[in-house]
Image 1 (spheres, rainbow, N blue to C red):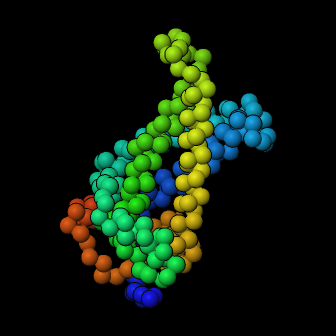
Image 2: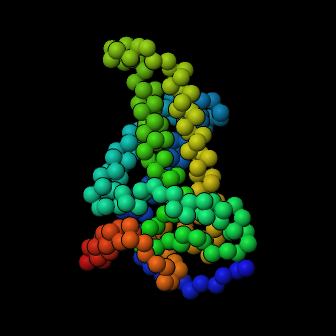
Image 3: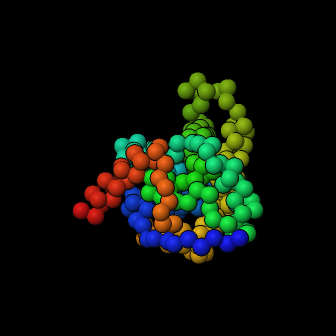
Length: 228
């Protein structure tokens, strides 16, 4: 059964969120492209040039990520990433079957909760585990010649390189799935447009959970300061 719901246009993503999203997209694209060339999968700009670009972009990403973490905790947006199992399996069922039957999303977006339970677990895993591992192994890889001086001679370059490469493939897999998920809105480009303009159409009258109210209040204050 296809459910019809009334949609309202809401300012959902702040300027910084959109800037971080697209900046990260560019940086990750450059890192993956140069990284795979370094590993010999193809030749575009040459090994040495690829290493230079990869190292520069990697440091840029590390600095940008530090600013993002600072922003998350100073604005209260960390609440958007708190994991929860509430309705988690309903969301998994929706993406597995319900979406193809025209069912309504069990956890529609709203100001106090931009990410559903599945997204929360995914984004938190990326930000708290995969990306830090990727950055640390990247730094180790880059500073290989200093390992002995730093007392890190016990490390294996082959193992560090393997972990770094595996992380790259995990990130690439996430991107493929993420791009597909952007097409699952009420129109194929709805989510992409929202990440450009900040405005997205969400279901009207969605009840705000008690645990979301603090995030909703903080978001409203952020939006007010932006528009002011």
